[in-house]
Structures are given as structure tokens and as C-alpha cells.
View (cartoon, helix red, strand yellow):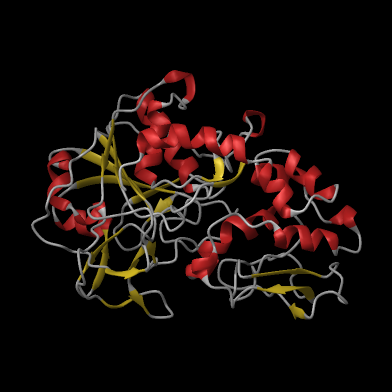
Length: 413
């Protein structure tokens, strides 16, 4: 089910939309802390689904609900924002529990670190972890729940685990005949489709469906594709409702006002993440343990004579144990790149790093790299010396086929 784009009685989120050639831009002015500094209306404002309370509050009335949320699950207003859990509680919506994805409900847990069950200190609500041993809500955890609301900011990359959480939540709810309500948000990497398409034999929490690395869809569009393409286990189908945004376009440049996870601090890191995220499957540090996560890469075993840039990772927010902690890493600084130039998965950096690795036997963490790439072929292509353009050419048929499926579920221009 899809709501029509109703005119909301009030606009809680106002984004700056300006024209840049043929590409429109949507931005929020932010301080370095990523909190909202100022909001000003220019042209037609974009309205995220969470702000369209008039559209979805009737669906929550009189129901016992669970919410899948994290620090990005907010409703914007003219002075900043409030968390959707806090807002709904003040509106007397009956919230039974919160399901927490990777990084936790408040978004402070390291990548890969287990999220613990507990109580939210601010609201007192029970928190149920969906990252660790338990990644899919159990029958018992869904007992007496009438509806599950999902509202999390995605960044449009297959191995970013929030879409895996979405899929497992939809699957669990379908099995228990519990409706799922998804509130849509912009995808900052929605303007292109690229990268290797995952093969079924490499399905994991870093990739649960056979889609390209960058799939060019909002999380609401993706939820509908999961449901209608029969990608939930055993052919189950969720009772799914997606509340769309108003005035959104896939070509808009959207600046996230809240970091979606600890190691994606700004627009540049989010734009580079599809490319530098592949280093997560290698022994190369991709900026974790610095203030420039996914904006640089390096390792002690990269050729010092080739790289003039170096840095030393240390434990910090979001990375207690970064790769090569306390060691000098030689590599490349990408902080001067223009975000508008990032419109594809760029393999030049990982190819260059492998080429200039002194001991190539230590470069790939083979199992991890395959999970991130979605197929074994990419590692082999790099190892035999194919360049970035040659490798990208091998993706094209799969991308064309995926776009045919994707086109059926696009909700925006």
C-alpha cells in the first residue's frame, strides 16, 4: 500500500532546494556537529515521511506498536528536530518497545560490535537488539504487537546493514501477520546504480538480495521491491505500507543533518563509502580511528615510496580497535575531492593500493572481501591486474537487468 502525496497541514521539515545546471540540490545548513543551524524555505520544500504525521498517525491510533529506529529517526521542526519515539509518546501513541539495529538506538556502538538489549535511559522503553546473535525479531518479541514502524536513514549501499535489518523485520512480521509501516527518507546515493551484483551463494547480513553494490533507491522503494519480488524467506509477503516523501527527486543532493552511523561523519564520507567501503574486506585502514573516516586509506604495508601521505589511527568515537591502531599507515588522502564528482563506484583506489602493496598475501581478508563485494570474481580481477575500467565493464549486463526490476518500484522522478 502506498499513500498518495498528501499536502501536510504543516511543514516540519524545510530543506533548501536550489538549481545547479540540470541537477537540483537539496541541502540543510549544518554545523560541524551535524546539528541543524538554520532552516530556510526556497522553492518547493522537501518533506520526509516522518514529518507527515497526519498521514500515518491514524494507522497507529489504538494500536500497540514497536519501532525500529536509531539516532536518525527524527521529526524536523523550525528549531531543530525531535526523535520520533519521543514525539509519538507525547501524542499518546502506545509504544511497547524499540528494536535497535547496528550501532544501537542512539547510534554510539562501534561497527561490528554487538548491540545489547536493555532500557532506553531517556524514555524507559525496552530496547531489543537486532544486531548480534539476534538479527530477526522472534515470535516472542513480536507478541502483542499490532504494528511495526520502521524509520531509519539509509545511505544506499548494499553492505550497509540497515536494509538487511529491514528485510528481516519484514520477514518476521509477515510470518506473524503483523503490518509493517515504513517512513521513507532520502537516499544520498540514489542518483546512480553501480557496482558488482551480489551472487546468491554469498548471501549474508552484508548482502541479502542479488542487487548491485549501489542500488539507487530510497528505503521505501527498496522495501516494496523486497516484498513484491518474493525475496522474503519461504515466499511470505508482508502487509506493507510505505509513506512517501513530498517533493523528492532521485537527483537531489541531500546533505544528512545527522550522521547515519559513527564512521560516516559528513557528505564526503557518505559519497565515498561505496568505493572505500570495499577496503573493509581487506587489511587496509579506511580512515577508522581518525576524524576522516572513509575519506582516506592506508596501511603500514603499502609502499612508502609511492605514497607521500601518512597517518596513524587511534581509538576514537566509533572505532575502539581500528585496523593498525598506533601504526603509521601510508596511503591516500581524498578530503579534497568534490562530492558532485562521485557518481559511480570507483575502483581506482583499491586497485592502486593492491598494486603498491609490498606483500600481497596480507592484503585481502578473503571471506570478508567476498561478503562486501558480493562475489569472489572481484578479488580475482584485481589480483590478475585488471584496471578499474576493465572491471566495471564486466558489471554492465547485471546492472541493466537490475534496472528493469528497479524501475517497477520507483516512487519519485
